[in-house]
Length: 256
Image 1 (cartoon, rainbow, N blue to C red):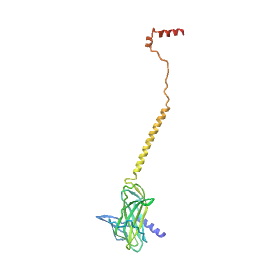
Image 2 (tube, helix red, strand yellow):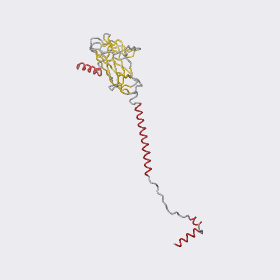
Image 3 (tube, rainbow, N blue to C red):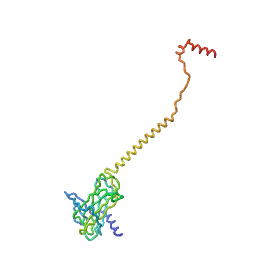
Image 4 (cartoon, rainbow, N blue to C red):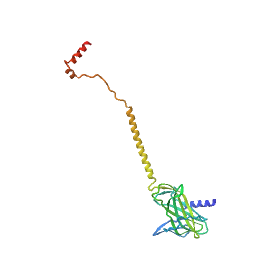
């Protein structure tokens, strides 16, 4: 078991870093693409005719190991609506050649794989073989829906193949991916939350300003009103000359 784990780990390192390994690349040629199997394998055709493998589940074949690498994307960030590439590596240590049928994947909710989010496009092969004691690498391009809400999801990827006309299946990846919106990491929810926060801060500032003005008005003292003697208008005195008012006033002054 330890030797088997070491072999798989060493194979993964070679898949991710070694330039010696030849990668099976898809190249557009009219109506079909060509992919080359590594290590002297036969020519593999990537076609559009998907075999009837939906809903089928097979077990892995003994002596066949698979690994998965996201090239230049160790964070496993998947932009919604845009294609993402991963590399599927296969090592055949059995005695019979492996005929690759298809690579397929699906997206699930992380807390319950029974909740299917999206079935991704299946990539099929024709006449793609991995001979005995050979390592091969196949690219797989997939794209999640552009309407998928950003967040963490689980990606389950499988490669279906035949040995002696008997179907087998290996799960090359069963882990999380991070779906982000196109155009950057700023989501609609982030913009909404930032806008809401700014609006709340503005309202809080206006409320504090109103409270400050209200307290300031209460603390202001009422203006003082000076009460003094009323001065007598000179013209009024002349008009009252000779009247009973002036006579009584002069009498009161003499008494004093």
